[in-house]
Image (cartoon, rainbow, N blue to C red; front, side):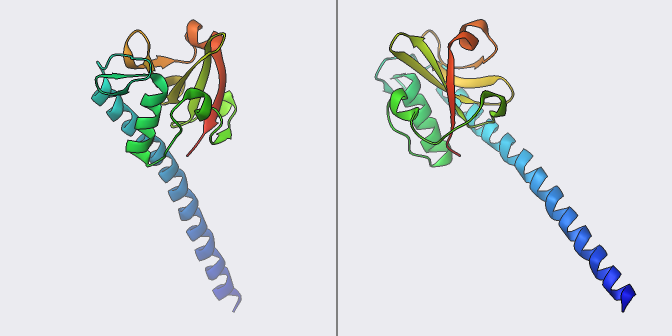
Length: 153
């Protein structure tokens, strides 16, 4: 009886360990999946000019680009403007950012900018000078203007 109970406990422990290992692997896989889907949109939209108020391949602004990427790649409907997007999801600390989180910047007195985190310090956004591109949070320009982050997935 005692041997059967010990065998059962070992079996349960192994099963729990396998579940934990599987969930860690799927978390890493899902993070890679988010990044690859975001980079797919980067590749598809690269070369599109920045146009304030634009919502198409002929011209797009930062909030429209984020809105389109999230809808097409993840089925998430976001509001159209950066100010409205800043109120969606939940607040997330800069130290806890992960792929898919939205990052916001104050670029002028009443002007805001939005992008989507990739890995580590990189984010995808529609730049006013180059259209859709990848930048780094630790670049001097962006680090000085960082405002907040929001998680929607």
